[in-house]
Image 1 (cartoon, helix red, strand yellow):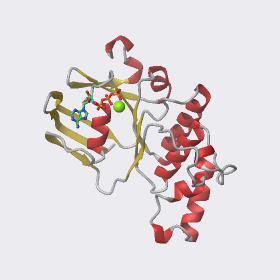
Image 2 (cartoon, protein in one colour; image 1 turned 120 degrees about the horizontal axis):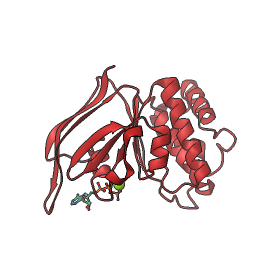
Image 3 (cartoon, helix red, strand yellow; image 1 turned 135 degrees about the vertical axis):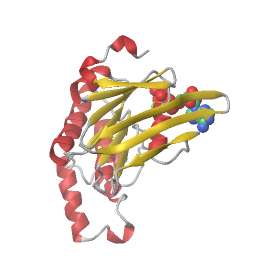
Length: 220
Ligand SMILES: Nc1ncnc2c1ncn2[C@@H]1O[C@H](COP(=O)(O)OP(=O)(O)OP(=O)(O)O)[C@@H](O)[C@H]1O
Ligand SMILES: [Mg+2]
């Protein structure tokens, strides 16, 4: 299997802190990997570097040619008065001039169905529950047909049911569309249930393996 992402010799030093040194790893196409590590070990910084939003001190990040990257941020509380409907919120990820095209409309209908948002597509984002908002963020990321999806603690503030629902959806996308999944989390049971591999940030370096072999004590 080809690698969709290759990270080589990645180093991130801040003025007052060396976050990590010389990390190298790769993600095979269609793999499901949890990114683990105690608070402050650099998981979000790593995601930002992968997304090109932060520049590493050294090293490189290479995605396979033509690979499209989707991103689901950690749940942020959207203002109750936020005026856009769930559907319009998803549409934001389509180029403005294409939003009303038949093709995009059909694609959005399909995604609404996949993410179980069809019935509430006209509900305002501000009124939606945490789980519904999180599924809307995922739907928005899916609009661009990503080959790899990066989720930074996307389940952190969800109740157990909403967590399972979101993860089942992610699993479905992996099975059906071979979407590669990179899932940042502190929730080890959830990672063990849905992911296949792990990367663990610890002592400024990275360990990896099969998630079933992960010892929980190793994280802290
Ligand atoms: N631009 C910056 N300048 C200096 N320090 C930074 C900068 N960005 C992040 N840090 C520090 O780097 C460390 C890692 O932060 P990061 O948010 O990547 O950790 P994390 O593993 O995602 O933690 P959490 O599990 O709490 O989300 C933190 O101590 C943070 O304060
Ligand atoms: Mg973080």
